Image (tube, rainbow, N blue to C red; front, side, top):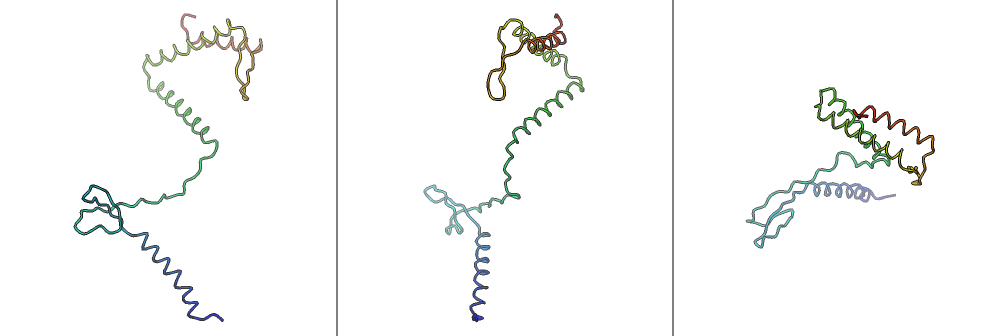
Length: 159
């Protein structure tokens, strides 16, 4: 049968350790500079030395969460959505004619470049998901040419 004194010690010792660690966590930290210009930190500064209490860092309110593997995709989609909303808001708010003309010129230039490539480059290709070249078929080339012509007609005033 265990001794009542031993049971009390087994109960009191962990409480004492817990209490001492709590005191240690609440201990103040001071910062001071000695006569040689060196900065020191400690629980108690020397007598006659000007010191200041150092603020303790606060622990994070929540444990840091690891970002999911696809977080970059979500951020990219959110960025694109915000950009589209901003563009729409600018148009609705009466964006300047210069901005609209610059956007039209950019789209016109891109359409003409694409159309030029489709009409003059013999072997056009794109990269697939595996990073391999996939050459355009004649049907794909015709579809892309039609799309580029439509873009050019829509955005290029002289065409």
